Length: 353
Image 1 (cartoon, rainbow, N blue to C red):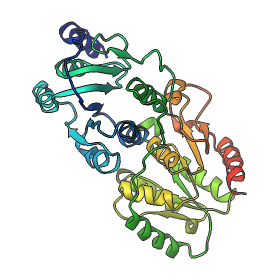
Image 2 (image 1 turned 30 degrees about the horizontal axis):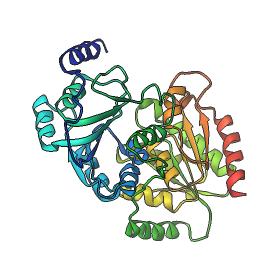
Image 3 (image 1 turned 45 degrees about the vertical axis):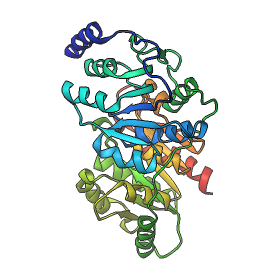
Image 4 (image 1 turned 90 degrees about the vertical axis):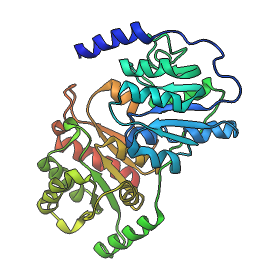
């Protein structure tokens, strides 16, 4: 942390200068910096290009993102141009990227505390306006940090679009769906459960150790759901958690009512399983945001971190939330099985009975 502070200090000293007004003339694109965005973050901002182009069809909307997210931004989220850069790029790579970008009218960079390389990159860009959350930085001439403090990231992006002339953007998420994957999994689920019963998706594995449930707790929560409902349950997990998930499938009270997808996981399969379900229970925020985009009844499990929650809570009127504990210790394994059972029963009765 101290090294980061020192680098930021030098970054501000070396690169933080106010931009000249009118550097780029004529109709120039809008550029979003999303190189750190993972799946959940990307779903939350999936609508921005659509709404900018709805307001001004002639305006191009570009994005810088990671190579793994390129196809989503290009094919699903309607960006006109997608530039990619690897994690932890060199200064040379950032300089080349700036040259490749050329002139842009607006840059949107929502890093809350910009690092030295962020400052170098922004200082090299040819742009009229930089919209950001780090109000201490001179390069950022449209400062939204204080104005958007404690607002959900959807609202932060809405404010950015307001500054670009989009008054009432529709912030409904774009969730990529693959019809053939949905059809394939529908057949699989029908073979597993021929009778027409309610299906719930459960994801006990979030990113980071503080949001990953233990096998034992996962089993206990699944048993609560099986006991307190007549639903069947699909267990969601990424490939790196498959071994833990397989243990869970052998330990629950009614193995016939639990299903784990046995092939390689992908975004297509995740979305398809959720689309085919009636509701979602999850500790994983990407799953939470996808469920919100699909308008599914949702029971989200969050650690008790008010700052994080205010910015990343489920953006859905069909969502309920349980906090893992009343303390600010971030560990989903502190969640009480008894409290979960009560909250699940209430949620289930509200939506399905």
